[in-house]
Length: 111
Length: 116
Image (tube, rainbow over all chains, first blue to last red; front, side):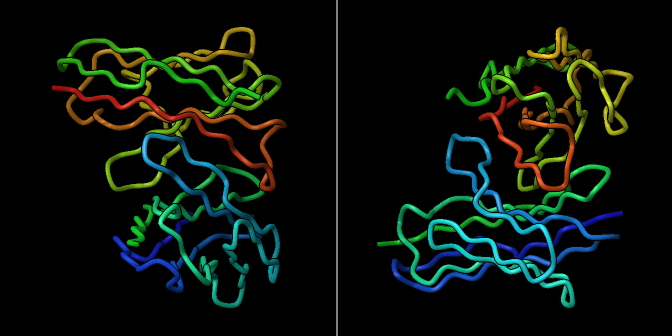
């Protein structure tokens, strides 16, 4: 079946540091890939997505590129802020079936 | 625009008791999902509705779990009787159109269930 493996957390960074959260996947066919973010006490919300190989999703300074050759969708941000502290989930949605989520990576940004 | 609404936000019950969760999706969203999220893990699908029809309930433990979506809008997820292992956050999500690899899912804040 499909699976998503995320970099284990928690991740603690200082403000303005560079962020990378690794995500690799196993799937048949050509799924769409997503990053969701969950702030304390809230539901998951879409951060960015990519629907085909070599697509780059971007939002709020975050970026991720769909790499089919390495089956990866790593999340990056050049300069994190305290307000970016949250749990980040990588997910894939195939053309048929159901979405598969990673276990989440907790990011804490210190001033 | 109001988001996905869930209630209650927290529920504590003793094992063997029944419990029910309610979800109101975003207006106009035809597809509704129920997920279970165990501590430290990602959401796992329990059931998906297209309008009022349950089109994927393969992961729903049907001996104790049931769900309904009357009139294709609100939905209720029930557990009877609850077991200790049912402690988790139950998430409801909705999307505008039918299932598609491209569609964003909009999540509610979840109901945190604790079974004692």
